[in-house]
Image (cartoon, rainbow, N blue to C red; front, side, top):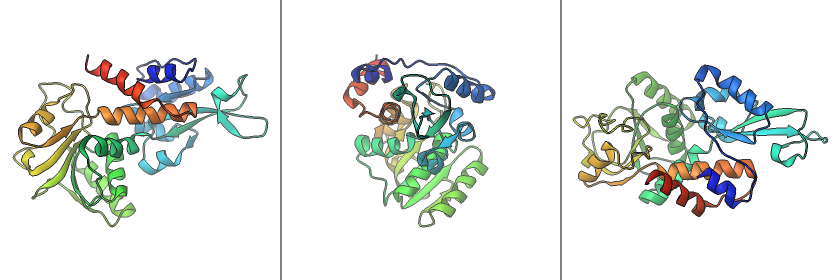
Amino acid sequence: MQNAGIAALGLDWRYTAAEVRPEQLREAIAGAQAMHYIGLNLTVPHKLLALDMVDVQDASASEWGAVNTVLFEGQNDNGDWRALHEFETAPQNLRSHGFNTDADAITQSLREDLGMEVRGEEVLLLGAGGAGHVAAMKIAATGVKRLFLVNRTVSKAEAIAFEIGQRFPAVDVHVGYPQNEVDLVLNSTSLGLGKEEPLPLDTSAFALNQSRAVYDMIYKPTETPLLAAAKAAGCKTANGLGMLLYQGAKALETWSGQTAPIDVMRAALKEAVYE
């Protein structure tokens, strides 16, 4: 997806993957900066850790409490910080600038794939990890009517509920399963990556036919056990492909300063995921 977008923009860049252990993340970010990388994407479990490792947090990172995109910048002769690709020779002073492109991607995908605006609706959110935290804050900020939080470790869900109560007091937030129907079940857990894994919710506590729609952030497999069960229950369903696309497109725009070629990136993503 990213390499297709980079090629379409005519950039002489290459997007590669590297596995980094959490205890070596700070060293990895510093190394990429020293080697004048344009930027980085971070995924689980690095998004929360990176908040304290970047030199500067964009408002998006501070607002949603996670970093998934890093832009490396240099200081020019006027003292201004600019993206590294704007320099002909390597600047002396460098810094890492952390962004979050996940939050907006969630609501954009929900809008396009499920026709849901979230505002004024009732949502059951499964998971309170990094992705769950970002989703909860974004949904609360968007103006959800009622939000239910379910997580294996209840204290983590309670911590998010407390934060929402402080930041978005108008939102009616609860820890635990709803007693009545909801508009959306949103899975932010990793349960479903394997076909033999259990569902991320207790169907004896909440039946899927009590929800109008189900969104699973997992995009591979394209139909998780949760989505298969939701479809059988008559729910409208969508996987996380749209979220992946839009967070990636925003990251490319952050690095390049250009408009991302969405159609090119979507086609490359579908070819890779659905092959």
